[in-house]
Length: 102
Image 1 (cartoon, one colour):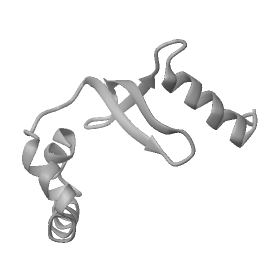
Image 2 (cartoon, helix red, strand yellow):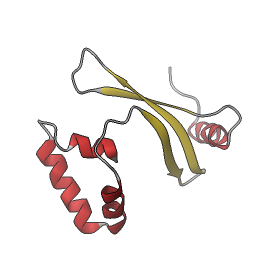
Image 3 (cartoon, one colour):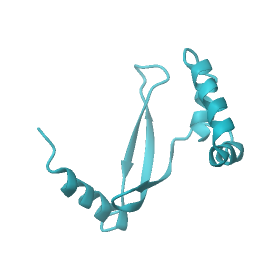
Image 4 (cartoon, one colour):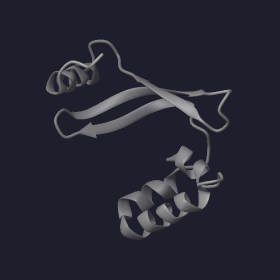
């Protein structure tokens, strides 16, 4: 949420993102509550808490890598602890979808 707050001020999509935030704030009390709690900052690492309908909660450790050749763009990587519930859940999802095409 903190990174989303920062993106709203960046051109060229700042106004479109701001309009979206305004709409979400009007339509969703949960979003409004989350939006109010988070400061503006660049997040470089942390834990992403996700919920998948087939496996339930997933906690992923994330790291944002800044691309020096592409101003304003980042690559976000996510990892899980070995033998954790999140790793088991990702294995279940992998089995549901089948092997990746090469």
